[in-house]
Amino acid sequence: MRAFVPSHITGFFAACRKDDPIRSGSIGCGLNLALGAETTVKPSDETAIKLNGEASDAPVSRYVVERLAKSHVEVSTWLDMPLGTGFGASGAGALGAAYSLNAYFDLGLTASQAGAVAHCADVVNKTGLGDVTAQNTGGLVIRLEPGAPGIGKLDRIPVPPLEVNYVVRGPISTRAILSNESVMKEINKAGEVALKELLARPTLREFMRLSRCFTGRIGLASDWALDAIDAVEAAGGMASMIMLGDAVFAFGGAEVLAEFGEVGTTRISQVGASID
Image (cartoon, rainbow, N blue to C red):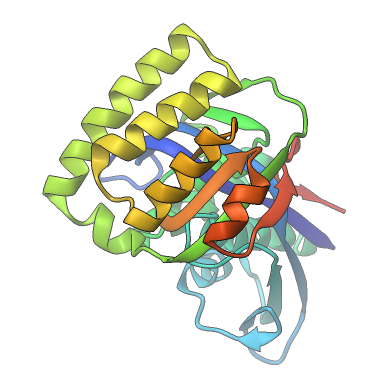
């Protein structure tokens, strides 16, 4: 059995923490991308996790394995997306592990139940708050209320599988940001305003405009990222910072974006996590 989980990039968000990780999460909006994670499970003499062919501690995926595996297995995930730069890699690995283990051991979990385990893994390890919920859905996802799949409330903005360009310069520590109370206060305020405005006009263009405004308000973007965004907009495209990474995503403007680094190209994924 092989599970596929799309990557997910967030345009804006507000964190919502509760004592129970299944009810913690975030509100906001983001895109699922065809860049993804593929996870397989096979029997093993001892439990092991591999990422891109190498043995890994992988604490987020391990959280899932410890709760769902009924015997020793090797869980192997291949991640196509950039790591540590806001593409939801930890959530993708955890959700892929949950889907694969559910199938391998015939656990009888629904998509939401499997997703809830992966969501809790991401929240407990402070590596993400809303990626898993969105990755379980696909498309351009509005996170209306926080919580794991089956708990949080979602909607989608209908969009075609448009081409998305991106440039990645480096990581930003999600754990450090989410643990900084003063920074999170500003993020939450800006995210709540952006969500309210998006719901008044839920379109892709409005999502990009609000993501750009959010980027400007929270003050986490590097000069490099802001210059890249300005260049794409000057060329007639739409761009914003990927939350949370020193990275930019854009619709259009690929030629000018190339002046800021190697341009990657993918598409919006219309489907969420799946298994074949």
